[in-house]
Image (cartoon, rainbow, N blue to C red; front, side):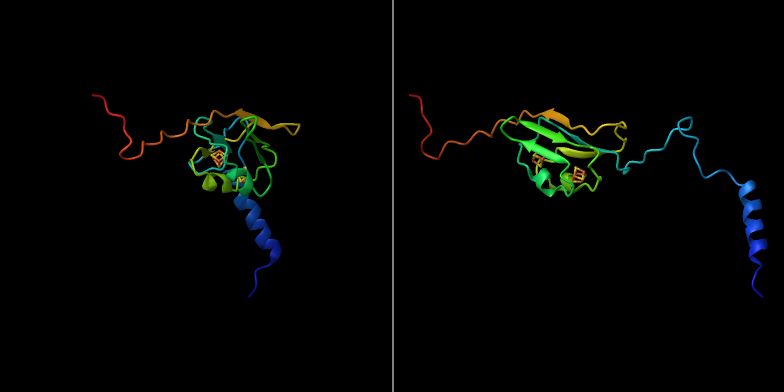
Length: 133
Ligand code: SF4
Ligand code: SF4
């Protein structure tokens, strides 16, 4: 015999009244950030080589790389935290930080000055090493 919907609803209401609330009293109760919470993208500016791969892989065009001006920019309101840029970066200088970035009321770009690492020293060809006498 099917349960009367009214009885079912009343049982749900009574159960809810005596259960702890599923809602958090934010901002009094602080949110919990887990290790893999997708918060915001961070960059280690001293490792970036301005290769532009992250910008090419970004589906929302949130990242812009200006090689001439040595700037790396991100528009956080466009970022959907897909982490494509993190996986694409050959230098592993992009990371997912588990804290959310601050809310904004206007669309802005965060701009980072990049100091690319110096190119690796090229080893001298064999047989051409200077010798002292
Ligand atoms: S996480 Fe995704 S959307 Fe955000 S900047 Fe990286 S590639 Fe673009
Ligand atoms: S953050 Fe990584 S992928 Fe993006 S330009 Fe720099 S080195 Fe290249």
